[in-house]
Image (tube, rainbow, N blue to C red):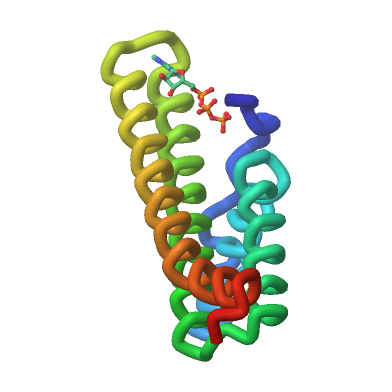
Length: 142
Ligand SMILES: Nc1ncnc2c1ncn2[C@@H]1O[C@H](COP(=O)(O)OP(=O)(O)OP(=O)(O)O)[C@@H](O)[C@H]1O
């Protein structure tokens, strides 16, 4: 994995001294920084983003129901969450074990396996949701 640029650690208390609200807002800022880092550096996440837009557009074109849309959004967010946790795990492993270590390999492979399980689940959900709509569109069965 490509290492992010090394920079001195910013003071932890910078955003936390004022009050609870500023802490809360700063927390959102850090979370968005993490999200942006993931989108910027992870090719898989950009692929998922493209697939997510296509899935939503297909849903609109096929007039899928609100419940079906909810399931599509759950599937989309599940893949993003899994990818981002995988990225965080990869970064921690690169930090703790920059050299080859069998445990580092297992940890990274297991994290990647979790993403794979989630991706398979999303494909199954997509087949159940879009399958019948596409079938009736193609074969005029409704
Ligand atoms: N420190 C390490 N020790 C042992 N094996 C490692 C180590 N780092 C990576 N690997 C092995 O190489 C594989 C790929 O690792 P890498 O960090 O490049 O992740 P990746 O899946 O290519 O992610 P990305 O494409 O997001 O960088 C891991 O799944 C693991 O099997």
